[in-house]
Image 1 (cartoon, rainbow, N blue to C red):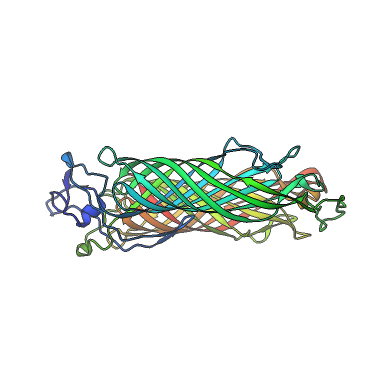
Image 2: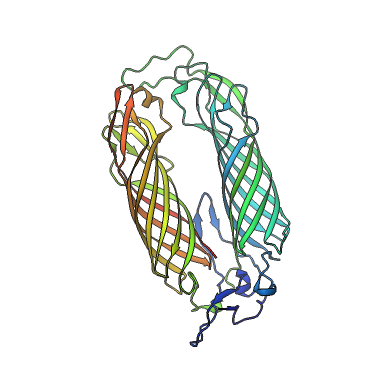
Length: 490
């Protein structure tokens, strides 16, 4: 193997190979096979918690000894980052009458769109999503308190080890939104319970520190610890009036449902998260290299990868989830998907895929919501690829078998007062679909995928009008649409 960069030598500033920031290893042959170089490119859009707009920065890398490359550019470049972690409320008692039910850790999601202006200074827009179960004195879970923040941040960087390791500080001021959702049966006919009722918007701030480690000049792993400052004032009501759209409904007790005291909510959070950043090179820097085959999978095609996608879903199995209950496309219809795989050659590979979404369950005879169900699919899939346009566009098909897991959550007062599907279940799952990868760098592809997923679980049914508990068959066939990113291992 020989190391080439446009036939050898160091890259020129502004050269497309410099824009991508690494040399390619490529075998020479008697047919004059030469090194393939990455092309600059006018970008596209990917929906993954935020809209990713590819900018047109200019990046270069300086040559090091032994064929290495500096990971720290001298010029402006843009990036997108995604992270997942856990959050801890600074004070589990968020108001005089409300507290977090379990402050040992709650899911936290973070996305950033940013711009490095120099080696030491950058700007980014950070989106944070946090949620926690809330309760009161003498109560179980009353519902969920959700916090969204959108904060412009300044990022101070200090590159080390030739720019491969980058500690940084972030801070900024923006706004946040808090809202209460998924109220439970716990507060029905309980006027001593206080429940938030309003959606509030107020100022939010962030201050934190992090560490990046570059796997490649355009891809880094990211660890971050951040404090989110956010407070809001909300209206409340005293308990929940029993639903009257069920058979033989309970009568409201005096005082239930009346306005309660306003509550000042302290929603400050400490967030620990891990994820990655993808950097984008100079746009249109290599138009003169039309016709050079894009090295999307190396000479033999053998490469591992990790894919992350988000999207939506639509039920295809009709409205009946199980006898007596209808499945409903809920308002969010959010899908999260991922896969870890390996390509054996340019045309065939295998992967472990995970898909997750939730749907609402309504009573067939009343039309009211009784609960929600989570759907997980764990599949072993074959992936057939057919690279086109010098390997930059790669249509593919997937098919596989595995296990499906369903479980109920967020049951409603109507469900408790009538009957509802319950219990976890594992069952056989299968899927088939197709997609396309668009190689925006040698190790990064934007992608879109459509897939049909079929799961037929056994479902338990229980409740006030269902004793004893019974089991019956169910079905959840869905069409999944998602977009995201596929990162190839070096």
